[in-house]
Length: 109
Image (spheres, rainbow, N blue to C red):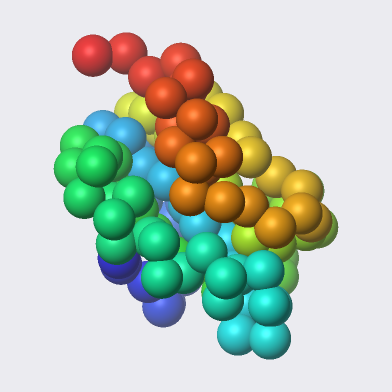
Protein backbone atom coordinates (compact mmCIF):
# COMPACT_ATOMS: atom_id res chain seq x y z
CA UNK A 1 0.00 0.00 0.00
CA UNK A 2 1.27 3.44 -0.85
CA UNK A 3 1.62 5.91 1.98
CA UNK A 4 0.80 9.56 1.78
CA UNK A 5 4.08 11.12 2.90
CA UNK A 6 4.66 14.54 1.43
CA UNK A 7 1.30 16.04 0.79
CA UNK A 8 -0.06 19.46 0.11
CA UNK A 9 -3.81 19.91 0.27
CA UNK A 10 -3.94 21.05 -3.36
CA UNK A 11 -2.36 17.75 -4.40
CA UNK A 12 -5.49 15.75 -3.55
CA UNK A 13 -6.84 16.51 -7.01
CA UNK A 14 -3.70 15.18 -8.72
CA UNK A 15 -3.52 12.07 -6.49
CA UNK A 16 -7.13 11.13 -7.27
CA UNK A 17 -7.31 12.54 -10.83
CA UNK A 18 -7.07 9.30 -12.80
CA UNK A 19 -8.44 5.87 -12.18
CA UNK A 20 -9.78 4.45 -8.94
CA UNK A 21 -8.24 5.61 -5.67
CA UNK A 22 -9.03 4.60 -2.11
CA UNK A 23 -7.77 6.78 0.74
CA UNK A 24 -7.39 4.74 3.94
CA UNK A 25 -7.28 7.06 6.96
CA UNK A 26 -5.47 5.57 9.95
CA UNK A 27 -3.20 6.48 12.89
CA UNK A 28 -0.48 4.64 14.78
CA UNK A 29 -2.34 4.84 18.11
CA UNK A 30 -5.66 3.55 16.68
CA UNK A 31 -6.46 0.03 17.90
CA UNK A 32 -9.22 -0.47 15.32
CA UNK A 33 -6.77 0.56 12.60
CA UNK A 34 -4.23 -1.99 13.84
CA UNK A 35 -7.05 -4.58 13.80
CA UNK A 36 -7.77 -4.12 10.06
CA UNK A 37 -4.22 -3.44 8.81
CA UNK A 38 -3.26 -7.14 8.51
CA UNK A 39 -6.25 -7.62 6.16
CA UNK A 40 -5.38 -4.72 3.88
CA UNK A 41 -2.88 -6.60 1.64
CA UNK A 42 -5.55 -9.23 0.90
CA UNK A 43 -8.15 -6.53 0.20
CA UNK A 44 -5.71 -4.75 -2.13
CA UNK A 45 -5.01 -8.04 -3.93
CA UNK A 46 -8.76 -8.56 -4.50
CA UNK A 47 -9.10 -5.11 -6.07
CA UNK A 48 -5.97 -4.60 -8.19
CA UNK A 49 -7.64 -1.82 -10.21
CA UNK A 50 -7.88 0.40 -7.11
CA UNK A 51 -4.89 2.43 -5.96
CA UNK A 52 -4.95 2.22 -2.13
CA UNK A 53 -3.22 5.06 -0.28
CA UNK A 54 -2.72 5.02 3.47
CA UNK A 55 -3.17 8.44 5.08
CA UNK A 56 -1.93 9.06 8.63
CA UNK A 57 -4.75 11.19 10.01
CA UNK A 58 -2.48 12.83 12.59
CA UNK A 59 0.08 13.91 9.98
CA UNK A 60 -2.61 15.14 7.59
CA UNK A 61 -5.17 16.58 10.01
CA UNK A 62 -6.04 19.44 7.62
CA UNK A 63 -7.00 16.91 4.94
CA UNK A 64 -8.96 14.84 7.47
CA UNK A 65 -10.88 17.93 8.58
CA UNK A 66 -11.48 19.01 4.97
CA UNK A 67 -12.91 15.56 4.16
CA UNK A 68 -14.80 15.40 7.47
CA UNK A 69 -12.86 12.35 8.70
CA UNK A 70 -13.41 12.37 12.45
CA UNK A 71 -13.40 8.62 13.11
CA UNK A 72 -10.83 6.10 11.97
CA UNK A 73 -10.21 3.77 10.29
CA UNK A 74 -12.09 5.36 7.41
CA UNK A 75 -12.11 4.98 3.64
CA UNK A 76 -12.85 7.53 0.91
CA UNK A 77 -13.12 6.32 -2.70
CA UNK A 78 -12.48 8.38 -5.83
CA UNK A 79 -12.74 7.74 -9.52
CA UNK A 80 -11.18 10.15 -11.98
CA UNK A 81 -11.09 12.92 -9.39
CA UNK A 82 -14.67 12.55 -8.14
CA UNK A 83 -15.60 11.11 -4.77
CA UNK A 84 -17.78 8.03 -5.36
CA UNK A 85 -18.20 6.78 -1.83
CA UNK A 86 -17.08 6.82 1.77
CA UNK A 87 -17.01 4.44 4.69
CA UNK A 88 -16.40 6.94 7.44
CA UNK A 89 -17.18 6.35 11.11
CA UNK A 90 -15.36 5.56 14.32
CA UNK A 91 -16.33 1.89 14.38
CA UNK A 92 -14.04 -1.11 13.96
CA UNK A 93 -14.31 -2.43 10.42
CA UNK A 94 -13.99 -6.02 9.29
CA UNK A 95 -12.54 -7.27 6.03
CA UNK A 96 -16.06 -8.34 4.96
CA UNK A 97 -17.49 -4.88 5.70
CA UNK A 98 -14.76 -3.18 3.67
CA UNK A 99 -15.27 -5.59 0.76
CA UNK A 100 -19.02 -4.94 0.85
CA UNK A 101 -18.36 -1.19 0.80
CA UNK A 102 -16.02 -1.53 -2.20
CA UNK A 103 -18.43 -3.85 -4.05
CA UNK A 104 -21.26 -1.32 -3.64
CA UNK A 105 -19.27 1.68 -4.91
CA UNK A 106 -20.46 3.61 -7.92
CA UNK A 107 -17.27 2.86 -9.87
CA UNK A 108 -17.73 2.83 -13.62
CA UNK A 109 -15.81 0.40 -15.78
